[in-house]
Length: 210
Image 1 (cartoon, rainbow, N blue to C red):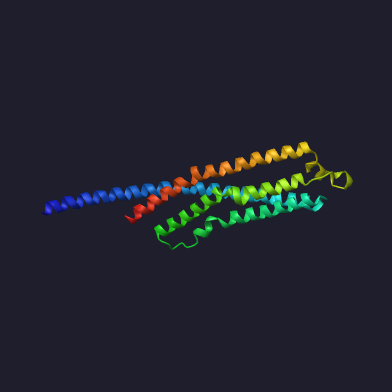
Image 2: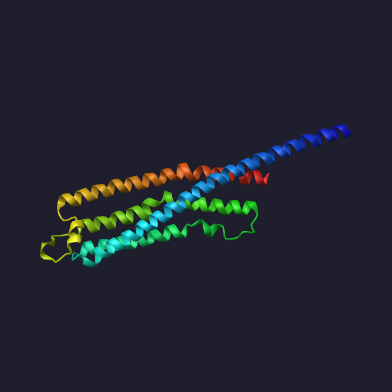
């Protein structure tokens, strides 16, 4: 009887060590992947916010100097779109989900998962909250520009204004292609970067519960 109990203890001890090793490996792999994705998000946010600020300044200058009411309206709408874009990026920062340092491992993982789910929703819905508002605003601006010959417009602005039909068509096509690329790139990021990590964190949480 004692011999059998010793065998059971030894077997259970080996299984426990194996589970602990598997959990350690899972956590290590997850931590590596998460840190990589967080760096990507930080770099992306800094780059996109910087670009949005440049866009705000540029279209602010255009809105102030352009004499065309429709084009001015489009430029103002673009500025509003850039401001909303910055707000959306900042609203999904990771710091909102890691403020409490005294949470259990499972609770910390749940917060990490929430951050990843938010990023997935953010990127997956980029067509509606970013691409379409900016595209429509830009089209209003491009097609709202009229004949500048009757107005005194700064020479630097004249170079940027899509005055003739050819330039309007070119910029419209470029914007369409860019919009399609942005939507595709963000949806691909969801599949490649975030869904595997969400699946991995679900596996870790299940293992912890067991």
